[in-house]
Image 1 (cartoon, rainbow, N blue to C red):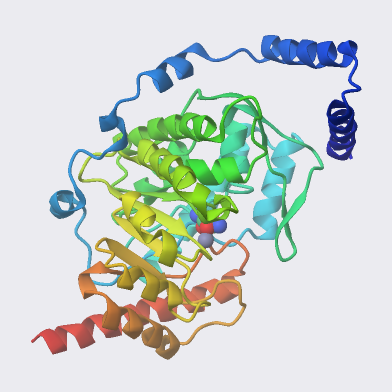
Image 2: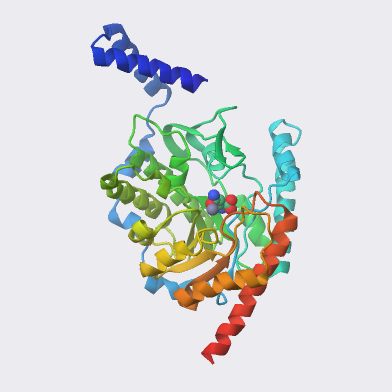
Length: 411
Ligand code: GLN
Ligand code: ZN
């Protein structure tokens, strides 16, 4: 309601301005409101300085994809992984509610989250996945979680918006320069990685998705806000790497939805949007494998921009578009690795091994086997374990069968 009220004030103000009816006091009111705001939220000098001194190299990994590939983690053909989140059961949600209400203190809460992480690592090992995730049990929503840890973001108690089907999120409001004061995800990564010999993915949300799923500032351009978020994420990538992450996934599902309506304005948007992703990730050493994930995104007309992200691996939605996304990617001659979502996580149906194999065979027909990853088409937070466990089991089984098939053909 307060947003609605504010919009009405703006409409009245605009109408008066157009008619030339604005009184001087209204102008003064606006100016003084801005100066009060600036006093309340002054620019952050160190962020401003970093932005001013950015160099071309800050946007570029030190080695190109072809040259860094061999130094990265070696994995089986058709590596299996998931997109990040595991079921947000009522038990997990209850933990967060009790923590918020003060019924659990920080160490009790963290211990309970760690127990969830431990269970999920054990399960992923039993299922035979190759690259594991910690499960995102500590996250409410992939944007809110990061906003809550960065300064420059404000939140509403009840400003819910519908995001997908019957799911709702409370988008953060960016009001000031974005500053990361401490690592945001390293603790949970370390807990997960300490429990397994298999690689665990560091898991971040990319700058443009954080920006596009928040209410942006109006006094600073969107590109500058994306770069500020990118700098915070860049420090997080470096910290995850220092903590031992060999694989880091930086999710950018909202890249395409930020495209301006007019196609002639696309290239300007894509130029800074892709640069923001590069700024966040290019700090990674050549041996660190950077993944990105995008769901429900048509690629055909932006394939060159997807390529320019320079992620080593991209996981995409594919199961609902009947392989159209894959076709678009392969027709564009994409040379990096691709995880075609092999089943639709938005459906409660457990895919059979045969269905997954069929999906994978389309991949094999279109792309060299070395480029193919095997994963669901999105995070699993909306599903129950009773669906997730058999689905992943069938997915891992399908990858094994395919490995044998391909080895036989090669011999
Ligand atoms: N890593 C996130 C998850 O698994 C990605 C979600 C998304 O693409 N929307 O939930
Ligand atoms: Zn997704």
